[in-house]
Image (cartoon, rainbow over all chains, first blue to last red; front, top):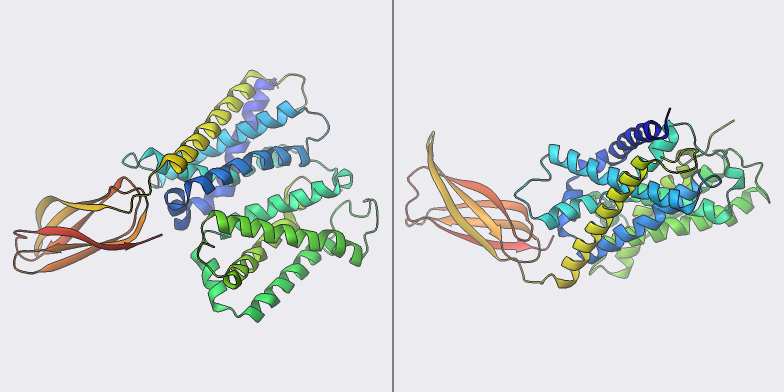
Amino acid sequence: MSGQAAYAQGLGRAFIGAALFTLPLYMTMEMWTLGFAMDRLRLALLLAVTFPVLIGLSYFAGFERAFGVVAHVLDTCAAIAVAATTSVIVMGLFGVLRFDQPATEWVGKVAVLAFPGALGALLADKQMSGCAADADADRSYWGRLFLMGVGALFVALNAAPTEEMMLIAFQISPLQAALLACSSLALLHALLFWADLPGRKARRGDTSFVSVLRRYSFAGYGVCLAVSAFLLWTFGRMDGVSAAEAAEFIVVLAFPAVLGAGLAHFVVGERRG
Amino acid sequence: MAKARDAPPLLEWIAGAIGALAFAAMLVVLVSTGVRGGQAPPDIVATIGDIRTVEGGYVAEFTARNRGDVTAADVEVVATLANGTERRASFDYLSPHSERHGGFFFEDDPLGMQLHAEGYRDP
Protein backbone atom coordinates (compact mmCIF):
# COMPACT_ATOMS: atom_id res chain seq x y z
CA MET A 1 0.00 0.00 0.00
CA SER A 2 1.32 3.44 -0.82
CA GLY A 3 2.08 5.95 1.90
CA GLN A 4 -0.92 8.08 0.94
CA ALA A 5 -3.39 5.19 0.98
CA ALA A 6 -2.06 3.89 4.29
CA TYR A 7 -2.33 7.36 5.76
CA ALA A 8 -5.90 7.80 4.51
CA GLN A 9 -6.80 4.49 6.13
CA GLY A 10 -5.21 5.73 9.34
CA LEU A 11 -7.29 8.90 9.19
CA GLY A 12 -10.42 6.78 8.83
CA ARG A 13 -9.51 4.86 11.97
CA ALA A 14 -8.83 8.16 13.72
CA PHE A 15 -12.36 9.39 12.99
CA ILE A 16 -13.81 6.20 14.49
CA GLY A 17 -11.65 6.63 17.59
CA ALA A 18 -12.58 10.28 18.02
CA ALA A 19 -16.29 9.46 17.77
CA LEU A 20 -15.93 6.54 20.21
CA PHE A 21 -14.09 8.56 22.84
CA THR A 22 -16.35 11.61 22.68
CA LEU A 23 -19.82 10.19 22.04
CA PRO A 24 -20.79 10.07 25.74
CA LEU A 25 -19.66 13.70 26.03
CA TYR A 26 -21.58 14.81 22.93
CA MET A 27 -24.63 13.45 24.72
CA THR A 28 -23.96 15.21 28.02
CA MET A 29 -25.89 18.44 28.44
CA GLU A 30 -23.39 20.04 30.80
CA MET A 31 -20.75 19.72 28.12
CA TRP A 32 -22.75 21.87 25.70
CA THR A 33 -23.33 24.43 28.43
CA LEU A 34 -19.64 24.59 29.29
CA GLY A 35 -18.92 25.28 25.63
CA PHE A 36 -20.54 28.69 25.86
CA ALA A 37 -20.73 29.39 29.58
CA MET A 38 -17.28 28.60 30.94
CA ASP A 39 -14.57 31.23 31.28
CA ARG A 40 -12.97 31.81 27.86
CA LEU A 41 -9.42 32.12 29.15
CA ARG A 42 -9.66 28.93 31.21
CA LEU A 43 -11.02 27.13 28.16
CA ALA A 44 -8.11 28.53 26.13
CA LEU A 45 -5.73 27.18 28.79
CA LEU A 46 -7.39 23.74 28.66
CA LEU A 47 -6.99 23.75 24.89
CA ALA A 48 -3.40 24.96 25.11
CA VAL A 49 -2.50 22.21 27.61
CA THR A 50 -4.03 19.66 25.25
CA PHE A 51 -1.36 20.20 22.61
CA PRO A 52 1.81 19.28 24.53
CA VAL A 53 -0.05 16.45 26.29
CA LEU A 54 -1.00 14.94 22.94
CA ILE A 55 2.52 15.31 21.60
CA GLY A 56 3.78 13.61 24.75
CA LEU A 57 1.24 10.84 24.28
CA SER A 58 2.25 10.37 20.67
CA TYR A 59 5.82 10.09 21.90
CA PHE A 60 5.38 7.87 24.94
CA ALA A 61 2.58 5.72 23.59
CA GLY A 62 4.52 3.91 21.02
CA PHE A 63 6.40 5.80 18.41
CA GLU A 64 9.38 6.51 20.59
CA ARG A 65 12.04 4.99 18.42
CA ALA A 66 11.53 5.43 14.72
CA PHE A 67 10.20 8.94 14.28
CA GLY A 68 11.29 12.47 14.80
CA VAL A 69 9.60 15.37 16.50
CA VAL A 70 8.00 16.55 13.25
CA ALA A 71 6.04 13.29 12.92
CA HIS A 72 4.65 13.67 16.46
CA VAL A 73 3.63 17.28 15.87
CA LEU A 74 2.02 16.36 12.55
CA ASP A 75 0.17 13.46 14.17
CA THR A 76 -1.07 15.71 16.96
CA CYS A 77 -2.26 18.36 14.49
CA ALA A 78 -4.02 15.74 12.38
CA ALA A 79 -5.67 14.32 15.52
CA ILE A 80 -6.95 17.79 16.42
CA ALA A 81 -8.28 18.24 12.87
CA VAL A 82 -10.07 14.90 13.15
CA ALA A 83 -11.47 15.79 16.59
CA ALA A 84 -12.75 19.20 15.46
CA THR A 85 -14.32 17.79 12.29
CA THR A 86 -15.98 14.96 14.22
CA SER A 87 -17.31 17.44 16.77
CA VAL A 88 -18.82 19.71 14.13
CA ILE A 89 -20.44 16.80 12.29
CA VAL A 90 -21.84 14.98 15.34
CA MET A 91 -22.96 18.06 17.26
CA GLY A 92 -24.44 19.42 14.04
CA LEU A 93 -26.41 16.20 13.58
CA PHE A 94 -27.54 16.37 17.21
CA GLY A 95 -28.73 19.97 16.83
CA VAL A 96 -26.23 21.13 19.46
CA LEU A 97 -24.52 23.35 16.87
CA ARG A 98 -26.91 25.49 14.86
CA PHE A 99 -26.44 28.31 12.39
CA ASP A 100 -28.32 30.82 14.55
CA GLN A 101 -25.66 30.49 17.26
CA PRO A 102 -22.74 32.93 17.45
CA ALA A 103 -19.34 31.71 16.22
CA THR A 104 -17.87 31.91 19.73
CA GLU A 105 -20.42 29.35 20.90
CA TRP A 106 -19.33 26.95 18.14
CA VAL A 107 -15.67 27.46 18.98
CA GLY A 108 -16.32 26.87 22.67
CA LYS A 109 -18.29 23.67 22.13
CA VAL A 110 -15.65 22.27 19.78
CA ALA A 111 -12.70 23.39 21.92
CA VAL A 112 -13.97 21.82 25.13
CA LEU A 113 -14.07 18.43 23.41
CA ALA A 114 -10.79 18.75 21.52
CA PHE A 115 -8.80 16.70 24.03
CA PRO A 116 -10.94 13.55 24.26
CA GLY A 117 -11.54 13.60 20.51
CA ALA A 118 -7.88 13.98 19.62
CA LEU A 119 -6.95 11.36 22.22
CA GLY A 120 -9.38 8.91 20.65
CA ALA A 121 -8.02 9.73 17.20
CA LEU A 122 -4.42 9.08 18.25
CA LEU A 123 -5.15 5.89 20.17
CA ALA A 124 -7.55 4.35 17.67
CA ASP A 125 -5.11 4.57 14.83
CA LYS A 126 -2.42 2.99 16.89
CA GLN A 127 -4.55 0.28 18.49
CA MET A 128 -6.49 -0.70 15.38
CA SER A 129 -3.48 -0.69 13.12
CA GLY A 130 -1.76 -3.10 15.48
CA CYS A 131 1.39 -1.09 15.86
CA ALA A 132 0.94 -0.40 19.54
CA ALA A 133 4.13 -0.33 21.50
CA ASP A 134 5.08 -3.34 23.51
CA ALA A 135 7.89 -1.55 25.16
CA ASP A 136 6.55 -0.79 28.60
CA ALA A 137 9.66 -2.27 30.13
CA ASP A 138 11.68 0.43 28.40
CA ARG A 139 9.38 3.21 29.40
CA SER A 140 10.84 5.65 31.89
CA TYR A 141 9.39 6.36 35.33
CA TRP A 142 8.24 9.80 34.19
CA GLY A 143 6.81 8.29 31.02
CA ARG A 144 4.63 5.95 33.09
CA LEU A 145 3.49 8.76 35.40
CA PHE A 146 2.71 10.88 32.35
CA LEU A 147 0.55 8.10 30.89
CA MET A 148 -1.27 7.80 34.22
CA GLY A 149 -1.97 11.52 34.03
CA VAL A 150 -3.37 11.23 30.50
CA GLY A 151 -5.66 8.37 31.56
CA ALA A 152 -6.78 10.33 34.61
CA LEU A 153 -7.42 13.43 32.50
CA PHE A 154 -9.56 11.53 30.02
CA VAL A 155 -11.77 9.75 32.57
CA ALA A 156 -12.04 12.80 34.85
CA LEU A 157 -13.03 14.94 31.87
CA ASN A 158 -15.96 12.61 31.31
CA ALA A 159 -17.15 12.98 34.89
CA ALA A 160 -16.13 16.52 35.84
CA PRO A 161 -18.85 18.48 34.01
CA THR A 162 -21.75 16.51 35.47
CA GLU A 163 -23.97 17.86 38.23
CA GLU A 164 -23.75 14.50 40.00
CA MET A 165 -20.08 15.04 40.79
CA MET A 166 -21.01 17.99 43.00
CA LEU A 167 -24.10 16.31 44.44
CA ILE A 168 -21.98 13.37 45.60
CA ALA A 169 -19.61 15.79 47.32
CA PHE A 170 -22.56 17.56 48.97
CA GLN A 171 -24.12 14.40 50.33
CA ILE A 172 -21.02 12.79 51.83
CA SER A 173 -19.48 13.69 55.16
CA PRO A 174 -15.80 14.63 55.50
CA LEU A 175 -15.19 11.17 56.99
CA GLN A 176 -16.76 9.50 53.98
CA ALA A 177 -14.60 11.68 51.75
CA ALA A 178 -11.51 10.52 53.64
CA LEU A 179 -12.66 6.91 53.22
CA LEU A 180 -13.20 7.53 49.51
CA ALA A 181 -9.67 8.91 49.21
CA CYS A 182 -8.24 5.81 50.91
CA SER A 183 -10.35 3.55 48.69
CA SER A 184 -9.16 5.39 45.60
CA LEU A 185 -5.55 4.92 46.61
CA ALA A 186 -6.17 1.23 47.34
CA LEU A 187 -7.91 0.80 43.98
CA LEU A 188 -5.05 2.44 42.13
CA HIS A 189 -2.53 0.30 43.94
CA ALA A 190 -4.55 -2.83 43.18
CA LEU A 191 -4.69 -1.87 39.50
CA LEU A 192 -0.97 -1.21 39.37
CA PHE A 193 0.19 -4.12 41.50
CA TRP A 194 -2.18 -7.07 41.27
CA ALA A 195 -3.68 -6.56 37.84
CA ASP A 196 -0.29 -7.63 36.67
CA LEU A 197 0.99 -5.16 34.16
CA PRO A 198 2.71 -6.86 31.30
CA GLY A 199 6.38 -6.21 31.41
CA ARG A 200 6.31 -5.57 35.12
CA LYS A 201 8.74 -8.34 35.90
CA ALA A 202 11.10 -7.02 33.31
CA ARG A 203 11.17 -3.60 34.85
CA ARG A 204 14.34 -2.54 36.40
CA GLY A 205 14.35 -2.14 40.13
CA ASP A 206 12.20 -3.45 42.90
CA THR A 207 8.61 -4.48 42.12
CA SER A 208 7.61 -5.40 45.65
CA PHE A 209 4.28 -4.31 47.14
CA VAL A 210 5.86 -1.50 49.10
CA SER A 211 8.06 -0.34 46.26
CA VAL A 212 5.17 -0.07 43.78
CA LEU A 213 3.14 1.70 46.44
CA ARG A 214 5.91 4.14 47.15
CA ARG A 215 6.97 4.83 43.58
CA TYR A 216 3.72 4.54 41.59
CA SER A 217 0.57 4.41 43.70
CA PHE A 218 1.20 7.47 45.87
CA ALA A 219 2.62 9.46 42.98
CA GLY A 220 -0.19 8.30 40.68
CA TYR A 221 -2.84 9.32 43.19
CA GLY A 222 -1.15 12.69 43.49
CA VAL A 223 -1.35 13.05 39.72
CA CYS A 224 -5.07 12.17 39.86
CA LEU A 225 -5.70 14.79 42.54
CA ALA A 226 -3.81 17.43 40.54
CA VAL A 227 -5.67 16.60 37.31
CA SER A 228 -9.02 16.67 39.14
CA ALA A 229 -8.26 20.02 40.74
CA PHE A 230 -7.18 21.47 37.40
CA LEU A 231 -10.36 20.33 35.62
CA LEU A 232 -12.66 21.51 38.41
CA TRP A 233 -11.00 24.90 38.44
CA THR A 234 -11.13 25.08 34.63
CA PHE A 235 -14.85 24.34 34.62
CA GLY A 236 -15.45 26.94 37.32
CA ARG A 237 -16.70 24.34 39.80
CA MET A 238 -14.48 25.62 42.60
CA ASP A 239 -15.33 29.32 42.28
CA GLY A 240 -16.62 30.67 45.57
CA VAL A 241 -16.48 27.24 47.20
CA SER A 242 -14.93 26.79 50.65
CA ALA A 243 -11.58 24.99 50.83
CA ALA A 244 -13.15 22.02 52.64
CA GLU A 245 -15.88 21.62 50.02
CA ALA A 246 -13.34 22.05 47.21
CA ALA A 247 -11.26 19.25 48.74
CA GLU A 248 -14.32 16.98 48.71
CA PHE A 249 -14.97 17.82 45.03
CA ILE A 250 -11.39 16.88 44.20
CA VAL A 251 -11.51 13.61 46.13
CA VAL A 252 -14.80 12.63 44.47
CA LEU A 253 -13.49 13.38 40.98
CA ALA A 254 -10.18 11.66 41.70
CA PHE A 255 -12.05 8.38 42.22
CA PRO A 256 -12.96 7.90 38.55
CA ALA A 257 -9.65 9.50 37.58
CA VAL A 258 -7.85 6.68 39.40
CA LEU A 259 -9.45 4.14 37.07
CA GLY A 260 -8.15 6.05 34.08
CA ALA A 261 -4.70 6.31 35.62
CA GLY A 262 -4.55 2.65 36.60
CA LEU A 263 -5.78 1.35 33.26
CA ALA A 264 -3.93 3.82 31.03
CA HIS A 265 -1.19 1.28 30.41
CA PHE A 266 -3.67 -1.19 28.95
CA VAL A 267 -5.34 1.33 26.66
CA VAL A 268 -2.26 3.24 25.71
CA GLY A 269 0.07 0.95 23.94
CA GLU A 270 0.81 -2.16 25.88
CA ARG A 271 0.29 -5.59 24.55
CA ARG A 272 0.50 -8.89 26.30
CA GLY A 273 2.75 -11.63 25.10
CA MET B 1 -1.08 7.93 11.87
CA ALA B 2 2.66 7.51 11.79
CA LYS B 3 3.94 4.62 9.75
CA ALA B 4 7.40 3.36 9.01
CA ARG B 5 8.62 5.56 6.16
CA ASP B 6 11.12 8.22 5.37
CA ALA B 7 9.11 11.31 4.44
CA PRO B 8 5.53 11.97 5.54
CA PRO B 9 3.10 11.75 2.59
CA LEU B 10 1.46 14.91 1.26
CA LEU B 11 -1.86 13.96 2.85
CA GLU B 12 -0.21 14.00 6.27
CA TRP B 13 1.01 17.55 5.74
CA ILE B 14 -2.48 18.62 4.66
CA ALA B 15 -4.19 16.99 7.64
CA GLY B 16 -1.55 18.46 9.94
CA ALA B 17 -1.99 21.94 8.47
CA ILE B 18 -5.78 21.79 8.88
CA GLY B 19 -5.37 20.70 12.49
CA ALA B 20 -2.78 23.37 13.25
CA LEU B 21 -5.03 26.03 11.71
CA ALA B 22 -8.10 24.79 13.62
CA PHE B 23 -6.11 24.73 16.87
CA ALA B 24 -4.68 28.22 16.36
CA ALA B 25 -8.04 29.65 15.29
CA MET B 26 -9.83 28.25 18.35
CA LEU B 27 -7.12 29.55 20.65
CA VAL B 28 -7.19 33.02 19.07
CA VAL B 29 -11.00 33.27 19.28
CA LEU B 30 -11.05 32.11 22.91
CA VAL B 31 -8.22 34.32 24.09
CA SER B 32 -9.45 37.40 22.22
CA THR B 33 -13.02 37.03 23.53
CA GLY B 34 -11.59 36.33 26.96
CA VAL B 35 -9.34 39.37 27.00
CA ARG B 36 -11.38 41.89 25.01
CA GLY B 37 -14.84 40.55 25.76
CA GLY B 38 -16.91 42.83 27.97
CA GLN B 39 -18.51 41.71 31.18
CA ALA B 40 -21.89 43.33 30.57
CA PRO B 41 -24.52 41.46 32.62
CA PRO B 42 -27.26 39.51 30.84
CA ASP B 43 -29.55 41.97 29.09
CA ILE B 44 -32.58 39.98 28.06
CA VAL B 45 -35.03 41.43 25.57
CA ALA B 46 -38.20 39.47 24.78
CA THR B 47 -40.08 40.33 21.60
CA ILE B 48 -43.50 39.13 20.46
CA GLY B 49 -43.62 37.05 17.28
CA ASP B 50 -46.62 35.56 15.49
CA ILE B 51 -49.89 34.99 17.29
CA ARG B 52 -51.65 31.86 15.97
CA THR B 53 -54.86 30.09 16.79
CA VAL B 54 -54.61 26.59 18.22
CA GLU B 55 -57.25 24.22 19.55
CA GLY B 56 -58.66 25.83 22.66
CA GLY B 57 -57.25 29.30 22.09
CA TYR B 58 -54.13 31.09 20.95
CA VAL B 59 -50.38 30.68 21.07
CA ALA B 60 -48.26 33.81 21.16
CA GLU B 61 -44.74 33.06 19.94
CA PHE B 62 -41.84 35.08 21.25
CA THR B 63 -38.09 35.45 21.02
CA ALA B 64 -35.81 36.06 23.99
CA ARG B 65 -32.44 37.57 23.12
CA ASN B 66 -29.50 38.00 25.48
CA ARG B 67 -27.65 41.18 24.50
CA GLY B 68 -25.20 40.90 27.41
CA ASP B 69 -21.72 39.38 27.40
CA VAL B 70 -22.30 36.56 29.86
CA THR B 71 -24.57 33.52 29.90
CA ALA B 72 -27.82 33.63 31.87
CA ALA B 73 -29.27 30.45 33.34
CA ASP B 74 -32.90 29.76 34.34
CA VAL B 75 -34.25 32.79 32.49
CA GLU B 76 -37.91 33.39 33.29
CA VAL B 77 -39.97 35.34 30.76
CA VAL B 78 -43.39 36.67 31.82
CA ALA B 79 -46.24 37.71 29.50
CA THR B 80 -48.89 40.03 30.92
CA LEU B 81 -52.15 40.91 29.20
CA ALA B 82 -54.15 44.12 29.59
CA ASN B 83 -56.71 42.22 31.70
CA GLY B 84 -54.03 41.04 34.11
CA THR B 85 -53.65 37.46 32.83
CA GLU B 86 -50.09 36.18 33.28
CA ARG B 87 -48.16 33.39 31.55
CA ARG B 88 -44.60 32.26 32.21
CA ALA B 89 -41.98 30.41 30.22
CA SER B 90 -38.39 29.66 31.18
CA PHE B 91 -35.17 28.86 29.37
CA ASP B 92 -32.42 26.75 30.91
CA TYR B 93 -29.74 28.89 29.27
CA LEU B 94 -29.40 32.00 27.14
CA SER B 95 -25.84 32.31 25.89
CA PRO B 96 -24.41 35.77 25.16
CA HIS B 97 -25.59 37.48 21.98
CA SER B 98 -27.90 34.65 21.06
CA GLU B 99 -31.65 34.04 21.05
CA ARG B 100 -34.12 31.30 21.89
CA HIS B 101 -37.77 30.94 20.93
CA GLY B 102 -40.86 30.02 22.92
CA GLY B 103 -44.60 30.52 23.13
CA PHE B 104 -47.42 31.34 25.56
CA PHE B 105 -50.88 29.75 25.51
CA PHE B 106 -54.01 31.83 26.06
CA GLU B 107 -57.70 30.97 25.92
CA ASP B 108 -58.60 34.44 24.63
CA ASP B 109 -56.95 36.69 22.07
CA PRO B 110 -53.85 38.04 23.88
CA LEU B 111 -54.58 41.72 23.44
CA GLY B 112 -52.11 44.26 24.74
CA MET B 113 -49.52 41.62 25.65
CA GLN B 114 -46.38 42.88 27.36
CA LEU B 115 -43.24 40.75 27.79
CA HIS B 116 -40.42 41.06 30.26
CA ALA B 117 -37.67 38.86 31.65
CA GLU B 118 -38.07 38.33 35.37
CA GLY B 119 -34.68 37.04 36.42
CA TYR B 120 -31.75 34.75 35.83
CA ARG B 121 -28.88 33.12 37.67
CA ASP B 122 -25.24 32.58 36.78
CA PRO B 123 -24.70 29.16 35.21
